[in-house]
Image (cartoon, rainbow, N blue to C red; front, side, top):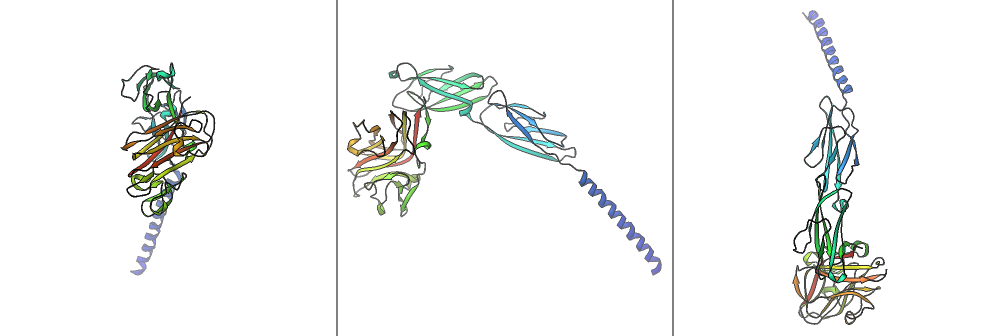
Length: 374
């Protein structure tokens, strides 16, 4: 019985070994022959800033699908696509192989409204009229423009309207531009009674908020604001600190409360990093709050220092522009100091103040500098 069973066992083992080997060979052949697709493409600009051409360079695919990030898609090999607004769009190409395997490539396309449409406003007619003429220019063909002048007046659909502004205010005008292909871009511009303004603060000043940085701190609240020169008259807080307050979002500050020492000729100032070119400028201050009863000035002056508090007004030889800040406000409108720089030179910006009456202060959140668009 044992002799008969042994040959049968050997034969069964041989068959089992052959079957396993054959199965392994089939699996290896499938892995070797399978090719996954490669998804890749190129993007080139079209005939306007909203139009792009897409060239499919994928391999080993049976079908492809384009999704342009704006709820539209295409199954063409090399489509052209028109975006209908500005913004960031994730373009996704999906390549599918005959066996159903897929590959994807994603590329972000950004359409910047400031680059798509250039909005300008320049003085129109006699300067005393405070009138400006708006224009919109684009590489696209402009079909229409709707202008909101930002001062509560009626909108205009003229391509190049003329508008009169209050010389004491800066406002944000909005142009809604529609192209002949139906694409729309919305551009906001800060405007004065002399025309559009360009922000340039990063070219000339540092540590301008929001969230001012302190170079020194003591306790839980007070410090000295970094990158600005703070004189001893301001440093009368705990530990000889002054010029920086952790409250209200890390603000630049000057404060004299109750029985604390008076501030006499206090200064917080910074000189421009490089000479400021000739031109017309607006120095903008946004406060969390302020309360001024005596003398508080926002100043732009020639050279490397601000004048003393008694030499701010009626000092055109040194002071390019100033604003005297009086009264109280919390989260009020921005305060602007307009000045004309006659020649390329270093300019010093900041505050000069004398607080003799009790309970005077300011907490500043941001500073901006704008140049009149020439």
